[in-house]
Length: 613
Ligand SMILES: Nc1ncnc2c1ncn2[C@@H]1O[C@H](COP(=O)(O)OP(=O)(O)OP(=O)(O)O)[C@@H](O)[C@H]1O
Image (cartoon, rainbow, N blue to C red; front, top):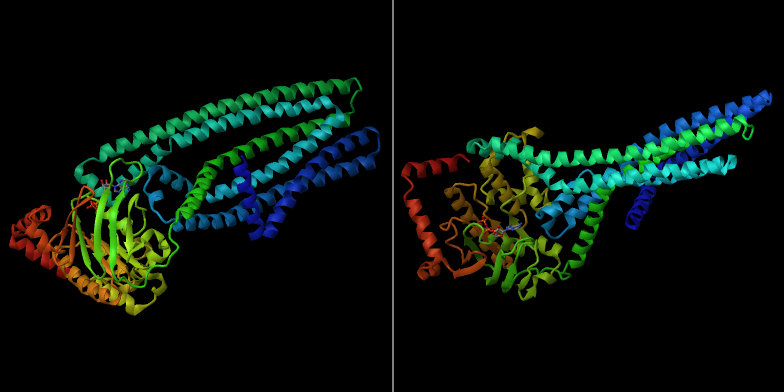
C-alpha cells in the first residue's frame, strides 16, 4: 500500500506542477461539495424546528440556505466531472503515456519485448496511463469522501451517540467489495495469457499476411476454434469471478440496508416520546441518506482505485525494470572513433531466459578491422543471436566481446549504437511515414540530408523503386495513410537503405538483408555493399557482418564463419573452407547443385523480375 501511496503522491505532484490552477480548482470543488452537504442537513433541521416553533422568517432563511447549498453541491459535482475527469486525467494521461513510452524506448535490452511474462505487463500498460491518473484522483476524492463521513458522523453523534452504529454498518459493503475486487484482480491476471492468445489468434486470422498462409493450409477452422477456446477460457473465468464478487457485494449491502432500517425505526420511536425533535429526525434521515450515498461513493472509489492496481502493478514493475536496466548498464566509456585492430569474441555464450540450451556457446573469433565477415549456418544456429549480442541488445552470460581490446560491456551502449548500423531480419516498417522518412530514420540527425539519403537509396539498389512510387520519396508507405502498399522485397530495400544512412559506422550488420529478394538482386546489392564496405574500412576500419543463407553471395567475404547449433564449427575464407571439405563445402556443393538444376526459363524470369523491381 505504501508503494501505491508514494506513486499517488508523485502523480499529485506532477498534476500540481503541470496544471496548478486546475488542480487547485478540483480541490476547491471537492471541499465545497463536502461543506454543502453538511449545510444542507443542518439547514433542513433548523427549517423544520423553526417552522414548528412558528418562527417563519428564520425557517424560510434556513430553507433558502438548504436550497443554495443543494444547488452549489450540484454545480460542484458537474464541474468536478468536467475539470477533474476530462482535463486533468486526459492531460496528465498524455504526459504519463509519453513517459512510459520513453522509458520503454530507453531500455537497452529487448527482453521485455520477447519474454511473454514481460509482454503481458507491457500490453496491460498500453492505454493504462489514464487509468493510473484516474486512480490517483479517485484516491484524492476518497480523502474528501472520508472527511464527509467524519462530518456526517459528528452531526449524527450530536443527536445520539448510538447513531454512530451506522458507521459500523457501513464497513460491511466496504469489506465485501474489497474481497470481491481481490477475486476479480486475481482472475484477470490468471487469464491474461489466454486473453493475449485469443487476441493474437484473432489477428492471425484477420491480417492479410498470415491470413494467406491460413487459407492455403486450410487451417482457418482450427485457428477459429483455438481462438474461441482461448476466449472462453479467459471470459468464462472472468465471468465466474464477477458473479462471485457481485454475490459478496450484495451481501455487504444487505447488511447495511437492514441496519439502516433498524436505526431509523428507533429514531422515529424516540421522536414520538419527545426524546428527539422533528428537525433532528429530518436531519438524521438527510444525514443517513448522505452517509449511505457517501459509503456507496466510497465503495465505487475504492473499486476504481483498486482496479487501477491492475495498471499500477505493471507500471511499478516497469519502473523497477527500467531502474534495474539502468543499474546494469555497464558502459561509461565512449566508443572508439575508428577500429585499428578489430572485434574479438572470446568464449561468448548466451542462453535465452526461460530456455535450457544455449543459443550460442564458446564463440572464439577475431574479426579484423576493415574485414567483411559472413556468418552462415542453418536456421536456428545462432546467427541472429550473435548479431544481437554485438548490437548490445543482450549481455553475454559468458565470455567477452572487445573492440580493439576494449570490452564492449565497458563502452556506453548509446555511444556504441551510434557507431553501428544494421538491417535486422525483423526490420521495422513505419507504414505511416513517407519513403524519405522511412529511410532517413536510419540517422535521425541527418534525416533531411538529401545527398546522404540518395546515396543510401543507391546503395540499397532502391533507385528504381523510388522512381515507381507515385509521389517519389514523398510517397506514404501505406494505403491507410493515402499511400501505397510495398511488396516484401521493396520493404526490405527500404530497410537496407535505412541501414545505409549512417556513414562511418564501426560495425555494419546485415542480418539476411536480401532474403526477400531474388538471387541476382541479392548479388548486385552485395557487390555494392562490398565496395562500400571496403571504402568504409579504409576510412575507419569498419567491420561488415553479413548473415546470409546464399553461400554464393558471401563467397567474396574476407572471413566466413560457420555456425552449427550455437557453436562456431568452421572459419576461414571461402577457398580455405572449400579446401577443408567440411560443413561449409558440403552446404556450398548442395546449393551450387541446386542452382545448376534451375531450368534456364526460371533463371530468365528471375532476371526479368530483377529488372522490373
Ligand atoms: N527470443 C528468444 N527466446 C528464446 N529463444 C530464442 C529467442 N530467439 C532465438 N531463440 C532460440 O535461439 C536459437 C538461435 O536462434 P537465432 O535466431 O539466433 O538463429 P539463426 O541462426 O539466426 O536462425 P535463422 O537463420 O532462422 O534466422 C534458436 O534455437 C532459437 O529458437
